[in-house]
Image 1 (cartoon, helix red, strand yellow):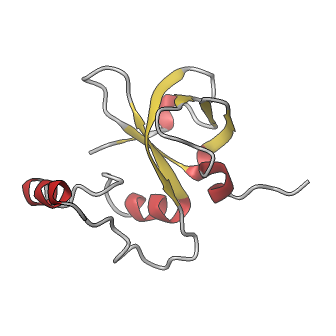
Image 2 (tube, rainbow, N blue to C red):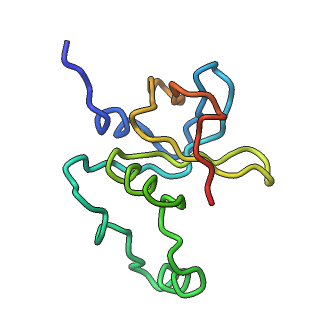
Length: 124
């Protein structure tokens, strides 16, 4: 049997899928998915650029709000490995990020992680 790499796993994930932690507890839903580039030596130049007027306006109002919104060197590591951003339930809970390496399984409408909710990185 051929082993799947991290990009194979993350390519199965879609916005809106339910995310559960290692214990099966609901963490939230997938808000954003980014494939990784493990061969990249730097993330410079790989940041998404605003293409449309709304995106350009948003960049003017909130400069530097590119995903993932976490400090370095974690940001570079997530961009290299690929990641999902998890929209936490409720207005007061921060959104979280998880690298593709910490995704155990993707089935139907659910993403199962290998870590607990406490082990996830919160958005800044």
